[in-house]
Image (cartoon, rainbow, N blue to C red; front, side):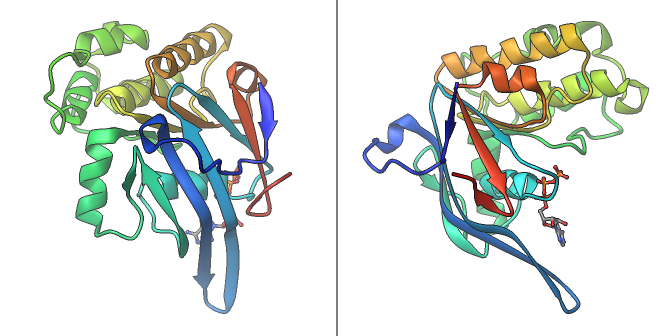
Length: 234
Ligand SMILES: Nc1ncnc2c1ncn2[C@@H]1O[C@H](COP(=O)(O)OP(=O)(O)OP(=O)(O)O)[C@@H](O)[C@H]1O
């Protein structure tokens, strides 16, 4: 594991890059107040790589993650996922790219409340009916939730919800997995299992970026990017 400036190395062919963000800026305005959440952040995750993003509360970690996912638009800079630009495009195009290429796990969960766990995972696969993908049962087994397949989200514990959310995020076989505190709700054994799962997905040639405070997650990461005040700390 190395600590990185997050700087972008321009020489890699785009086929080797899961996500590349260049000089991202994001300003939030409420009334007269302006918050500079991202101030020129450049980050790259290669295929096969697990990157942990650390930083104090308010340093811009979640903002970076939603900009990489195309869930929010940066005010400046650009994001490319698997060589395709996701920033500064209509929401429908961003959603289409996300459904095919990206798995996202946010702190607020990504489950639809009136569908059981199994149906939630299946729904996330509808954009990618390609052969060779993992089936719903295999995914639920991998996250240790096969026995809760028929449960509704509100019937799950915090740790089970996190793992169901992860199964949904992995359901489309993403080139890029973006996860905000994927192990925050998990005990030691469950955390190990999830971290091993993320590592195994990276070893298949996917890029994995996790926002985390967990020392265990930092330990398994190939590289750490530290944010401070909306900038990559050097
Ligand atoms: N929708 C919003 N409107 C206004 N300000 C926001 C909004 N979202 C985030 N911010 C502000 O932007 C800054 C960065 O927030 P962000 O959530 O990205 O930080 P973080 O590093 O993820 O924090 P934490 O570790 O506490 O989750 C903070 O000052 C936050 O208050």
